[in-house]
Structure formats: structure tokens, C-alpha cells
Length: 77
Image (cartoon, rainbow, N blue to C red; front, side, top):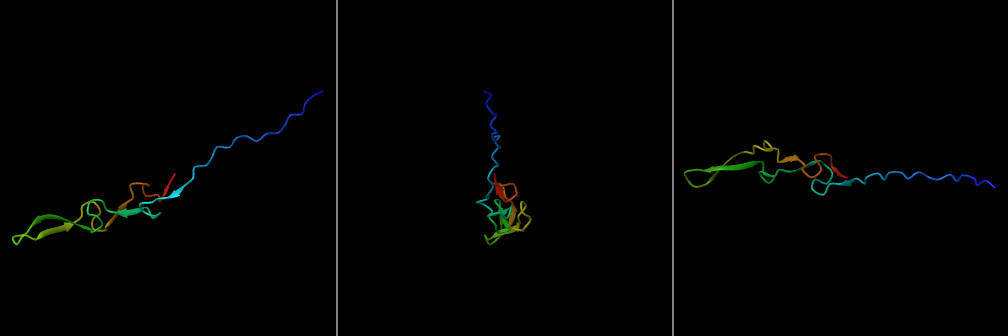
């Protein structure tokens, strides 16, 4: 006569899968793009024609900056 109500599972929203960042390998820090990871940039040339270097203005000589791909988190959703 009467049908029993069948219990059903509510659809759960899928959790985003977090993958490790390919640029910084999960550290959140990557090589500076301004100096290429050297920590210094050439500004001018000396009287002998050799380049004159100063500390990088982007990373301040630390050779690494915050990763642009993962925004410093280390994981990509």
C-alpha cells in the first residue's frame, strides 16, 4: 500500500584537491625573477668596461621571493 521512503545520500560537494606547487616544490619561495636567483643586478659599467653590481631591489639579496604561482602557500587547488 504505502511505499517506504528510501534513505538517500545527499550529494556532498567535492573537496578541491590540493597539489604541490611545481615552481617552488611546496616551499612557497621561488627564485627571484628580477635577478634570476643571483641576489645582485648590474647597474652600469666601470671605466674598464666591467659591470657594476648592486644588491637586487626585488629580493634584497636573499635570492628568493614569494612564489607567484601558489602565492606563497605551497599548494595549488
